[in-house]
Image 1: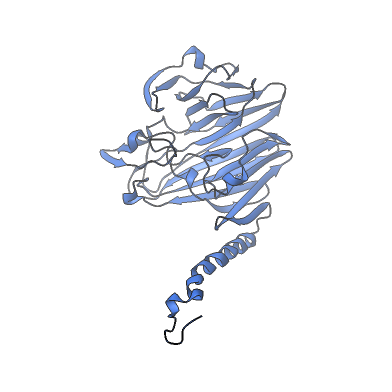
Image 2 (image 1 turned 135 degrees about the vertical axis):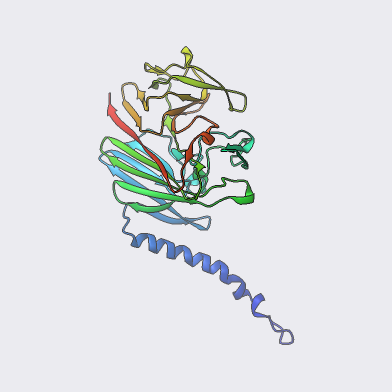
Length: 338
């Protein structure tokens, strides 16, 4: 009850205090309405943890791709019929706003780790903060941990965009850029386009990559041709570039279960094959600038990774991009029966 002797001011009135929350609540419905008016049909739009979540489905024949733009611009699923080719992303992870547990996520503006957060570029040194749980060094850039905007989507094609502002004193990536991903599904393939645009009036370092998690079985095989590999220390930081040793040579298809890897290979042809014997074959083909590949085969996990990237681990500082210029490429996943 409000006392007549001490009127309640408008600033402290319960209804006034509730207005910001009400505005946020109803703005979510405005966002959903605007999204639906854009003409997108193959999508689920709902709210979770106070934000809009969009699930996109692209499909051609039996090939289907699920996208989770708000969860780090990620691929949430990739399958043929009922057979998963990449590890499926859980509903909880789709709603988390992060892509680190996705089927695949983008690596922008750099791949892998930057030792101690020290970025050296053209005579300047920038210090980046840690950004990955349990890892002592900044890893895999910004894209995986931010929401991406849906620029266009229909039954077989989608384009999503992430625009990054300077991190300033926070210690994040210190340069503005715009990243784009496009996805086109055809009956036998998925075509992923990736690009990064320098929004600064100066040259900046800028890299790209894609981090897919392939479903792993005891007999799965990998084939790819590379020239050299970076050995790493206990923190997975590169220490020495050496010719590819025999145990890590995948020039001919071979099973992956006898190796444990988390290494960057260079001199890559841009082609690789993942083979599930007696079932399916996936041929991966990446254009320039993807001439490095990180092969990640963790012990005891139901997945492994073949990551097309534009630079060796820790060396994005050697990859300059001119003012207002764009670096981009394409990665194709082509499926065939065995």
